[in-house]
Length: 269
Ligand code: ADP
Image (tube, rainbow, N blue to C red; front, side, top):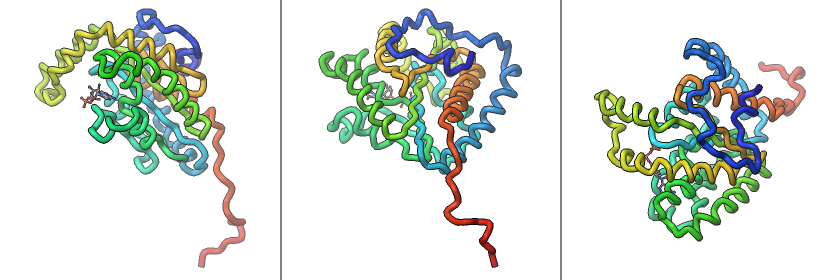
């Protein structure tokens, strides 16, 4: 079965994250098993990006969401390692600035959407507005509960305008998060990543899972699907995401545009 089918949340599906094994590796035993396939995917992605840029017809938007230490940064570093920075834009969404907070929640998002020929990567996304915002009651329930429909309408607009949207939830277990936090505390080179706030957020794990389940269940239409990626094993996470990207880009059936003149008649003097 293709990874795209295996991990995609079907439209209307009610997601229960306890049914998804974060340790799943599709029978692959180790990093070595995945290495060659990952390398092939990364090389293929580079070719497909070249074609995407040349054709200038589609935009590709990748949204990455995860709990703290879920692996968003590592995914970008590994899976995108073959991508030409010229055609790629990464946007990290943090706590909204004063100016952003004075606008509707999609204002800052819309500005960061990739244009035709580009790959845009969202490190966090508009989904924070139904995740952290919902868990901490940063706006009243009446406000965040309307956002699922608003997100669906927004993503439909983008899809109708040639944006291929792929949303990845990196699924790690609570035990794996503990191990990653402990590693950061142990390893001096990782101390810069230690944030006491993350330990506070961890106490709200169940609330976050409920918020993720709602977003995954309510916002996964065929034109903007969510993928639940088993992410305890970083090598499998990278393999799965790279494979879904390749499958999706190949499905766009892209072609090089015809030359603007009869090149066989051109002579360079
Ligand atoms: P990261 O954890 O992604 O590496 P940071 O440590 O700077 O980066 O965390 C960014 C923070 O911004 C997260 O705590 C996230 O929940 C928060 N954030 C992002 N978007 C929003 C939003 N719309 N409203 C409130 N907080 C947000």
